[in-house]
Every structure is written in structure tokens, then in C-alpha cells.
Length: 98
Image 1 (cartoon, rainbow, N blue to C red):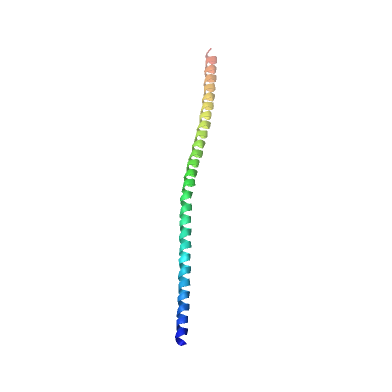
Image 2: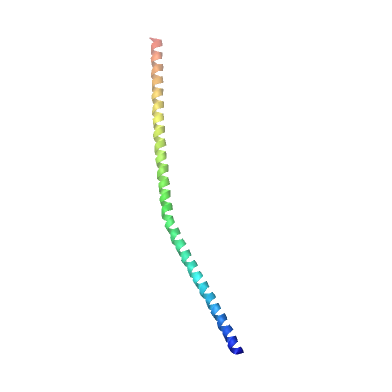
């Protein structure tokens, strides 16, 4: 009877150890699957990030083009004003000498 009791405890301990190992194997498998999924998702994020960079660069280029157009308009206006001032000064100079 003592022997059967020892065998029973041994079998029970073995079953508990087996359950523990089985749980750990399952946990590792789940962790591996999670890591694999995270890596997969991370690799998908790279594409949208590069798209965002391209979009940002396009927006920046558009802003530069708009700014250049404004500067060009200001330069044309300034040239026109200078032309009017020069013409006026020339007329006034001619009027004074005539």
C-alpha cells in the first residue's frame, strides 16, 4: 500500500510537471505568434511611412512654388513702381529743363 501511495504521488507529480511544460510550450507558441504578427505589422507600417514622406515632400515643394510665385509678383510690382517713379522723375526733369 505504501508503494502504491508513492507511485500515485509520483504519477501525480509527473502529470503536474507535464501540465506545466504543456502550458509553457503553449505560452511560448502564443508569444512567438504575437512577435511574428508584430513584425508583420511593423513591416506594413514602413510603406505608409514612406508614402507620408513623399506626401510631405510634395506639399513642401508646392509651398515653395507658391512662395516663389508671390515673390515674383512682388518683384514685378516693385519693378512697375520703380518704372513709374523713374518715368515721373524723368518727366519732372524734362519739365524743369524745358
